[in-house]
Length: 351
Image (cartoon, one colour):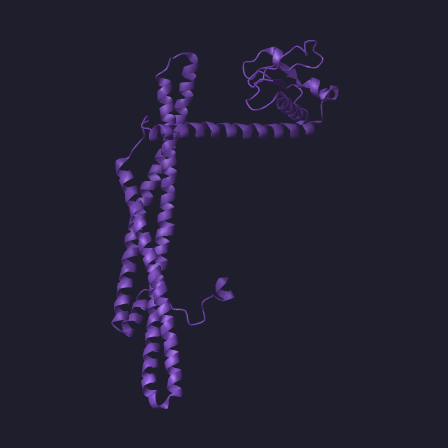
């Protein structure tokens, strides 16, 4: 069987069955036996399908001739002509309605995906036009650049926290060692004791500074990975809505340039409705993005003003050796340190 040859399906009772040819196209790479198996599976589906007495398989597709039609009543047998109970018909109608709804949804999704892909490719190759809001696009680009810079600040602050934590742990171990040597070396008891007290004081102040820096890191992380990310998600939906709007706008423009017969006018009316729907969707997301960008900027300034002041005061107090000012900084920003050994919250706190 040559790939691409067309033959026509007839009933076995037809006298021309052996001379006939089948109407469906045999795809390249498949033989006739495989195609016949596919048609047998299709017939089985039609037999088991709900209330398909009046349904026919049209082998010629849309616009095919009547001689390519196989009535399903001949496939299912004479018993399928008897009506079922009213409850069974109701269930069949519901099943058919769900199937039609799913098929309609898939059709709309496929058509929308095709139009958007076509629009995207046209824009990439410079053949299609796109809707551009210069002011809004500039604000979006500023936000993305700001997010990249804040992510770098967050990465460096986390690195500082890790290094400083290791230093505090080393100071604590060194203080314990000095204290032990002070007890075991009577001739150097005072010297080891002074150093042990110094290291313990540095360790205490270091833990206080770690509390401030951890609060700084946590706040920046919330700003970058939650607040900014939420706005960027809205921007992503806005960009998708813009692409859909331009796709349906281009479709409407193409139809408007064609002939104005009755069929084309009906398609233009349908395209006009879809254009209006996606235009409203685009404008709605555009408004959401403008509002979120405004509130994000206000929130960013407020949060960073507080966090930068905290970071500066805590670092300055620690390296100046001013324990009182360091503790006062934490009280000013309502930062509570966890006592040693309280890394995990109790089950009461988790409730």
